[in-house]
Image (cartoon, rainbow, N blue to C red; front, side, top):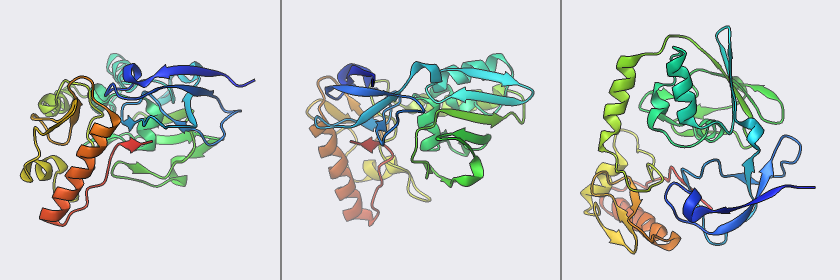
Length: 256
């Protein structure tokens, strides 16, 4: 018998937008094409979203032995950051300010600047253990389509407190209001936030959502924001930037 849970995305999602709907609890034996929501930190859930799944709690674990780190796909990024710091394991300093889970971060190759989660990745467990080389990774992208139940990393160096502090300082210009992080991928050689600001949209408000007046690639929920508010601002940003610069912004977030 399948297991489900009711999730209120207006509370669960990092941007505090979304409906209250039934979500299937996924393990290695019952996955059937559901979209895995992770911690809903980079996913905008529409009122009509269907076929959603969330990993079972048994995939929240960290194991380390002899230079090899095994991490469950449901493990939160910040939990892994703390574990790595406490155990002097390098390569995860960038996770300090990245919300979400390891599984979701691997599927979108999350990172900060040149620090990416795929850098130290050896293998992932989807339907079976698969070598990293079986997949393609690039800027904020992988071609992994299945759930990531477990990840295996190689530890190549010690924890770097100088790098950690540098990466934390880079995050100081990010807004504190609820958001999904960067809405758009940075175009090659430019920054989505700069382009949105250049077309005069920084600080624009639609309903309860604002294009942040701190960082224009963050859309924040000021209270009572809706899916429709977000879609309006996303589409407007893409239209204005394309009209002025001929650049078609690509979403970094997922929209369901």
